[in-house]
Length: 116
Image 1 (cartoon, rainbow, N blue to C red):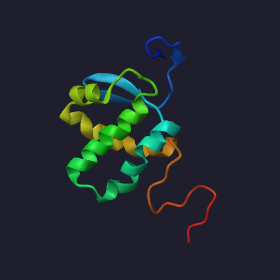
Image 2 (cartoon, helix red, strand yellow):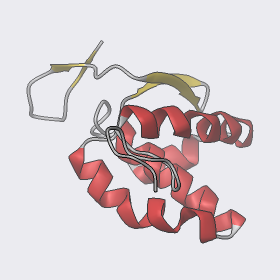
Image 3 (cartoon, one colour):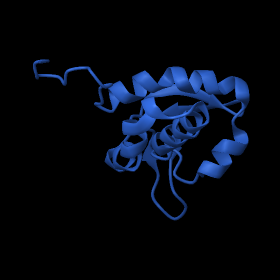
């Protein structure tokens, strides 16, 4: 499978974790640098958010990764396609997404550094 933005050349799909949105399978790649920057504040504040805010943040973080493989898939389309029962699977995909993106959860030592 290939990905392309309208008017751009096709590129191979970035590998990641398969997820389902709206009954359709998608390949969720790691966050790229742009996605890491875009979601930095969401990731930093996530533990202090209300449940509704966490849901919105989760969807935005997943979308930030998905656009690497599906550049024309908008956040609004994703929200419209997403079924309630699929949210649990998205939540369960987050640790793998963060790990593959090189991120650690708060309190975890970074690779190569010693915890104090």
